[in-house]
Length: 142
Image (cartoon, rainbow, N blue to C red; front, top):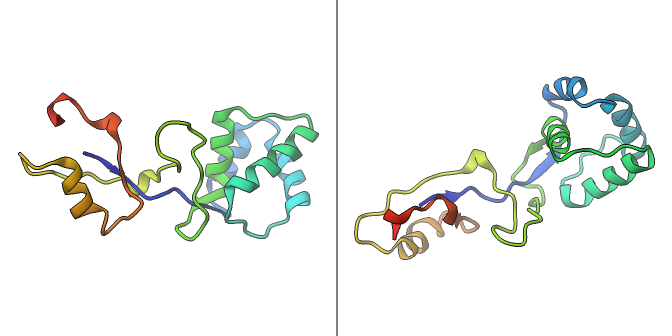
């Protein structure tokens, strides 16, 4: 059983990975300057509303980012923040929010104990937004 970590909330910040992203993503420096002009440097704790604004600015400049580039930009210019608005996963099935891999944890459920009863009793009181990642279970988990 793997209760995935809490919702992944992200907040804009300056981090060392920015220089790496600027080297890896073609045209990012020019785009970053345009974004700074349009958005300023005030922290925004809602990636769900910020990314569509960023995409609009980039599209107006003629640029589109691949999912890998989007991740590189987000990782470089944001950081995980528990006080920020949770990042929606955009998936129809599965968790509503992106998991924060830094908060991922596992539990050893005693043999013969119902996994869901254990989860409800031992995990949810401490991490109310945790969930069981069913893809990590195997036939032995029943």
